[in-house]
Amino acid sequence: MSSPARPVGELLREWRQRRRLSQLDLACEAGISQRHLSCLESGRARPSRGMLLRLAERLEVPLRERNLLLVAAGFAPAFAQRALGDAALRGAQEAVLRLLAAHEPWPALALDRHWSVVATNRAVPPLLAGCAPELLRPPVNALRLSLHPGGLAPRIRNLGEWRAHLLERLRRQVEATADAALIALLEELRRYPAPPAPAAAPPELPPAVPLRLATAEGTLALLSATTVFGTPLDVTLAELMLETFLPADAATAAALHRLAGEGQAA
Image 1 (tube, rainbow, N blue to C red):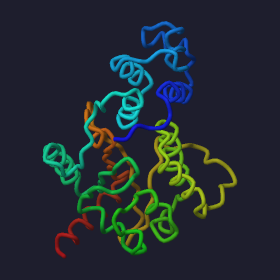
Image 2 (spheres, helix red, strand yellow):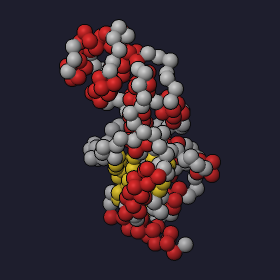
Image 3 (cartoon, one colour):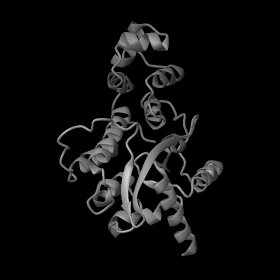
Image 4 (cartoon, rainbow, N blue to C red):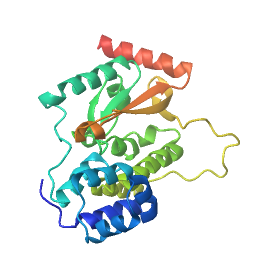
């Protein structure tokens, strides 16, 4: 890993400001003096490896960026970064595939930090019928596939609220990580056609925003949930997320069972 051009103190200050913490706030959380933190940020003092990791933890810096902080300070990275297919991650990969399969007949996907699809279960492909072939060529981006006019967007009955939900999730992710690829993805998605805003807010908001997707089996109402590894020490595992969908009503559950039966018959 090559050392970034920017000094570690500047990077620390940027992460602190991104988290909207004052020097005093962060110093108190890390158990150091505000003067010492000021010296670290200005470059008048050099952080130890332990101090840098402590500050990064308090700032909730993603593991990938913690490695960059360490390298900027002249230390070796602390967290391994392996491909999911690496032998060392075989157990995690098998766990992910088991979780996806166990979720059938409900749809589920494994996604990386840029929302690229790593794996799906058998309930997902039937829902993608009619999507433009270029959007289905690897690496498939789940957000692009959802909101692109050639993707699922024309079949999403509540595109306005689903689009707002996805863009807000991505915006929060950009704020948390400052990832350049995610920033570019957010700008791209915002340029896609958006449906007109409703004239008035609904009288009663639902407890969660469902994905209402038109299919050959009727309109499905799906509630999404996200699962992440709880204590990852590997960059790839820390960034992996499982996006699972559950039927929001009995009609959707029955339709998904029918789609699963048709897929097995084929």
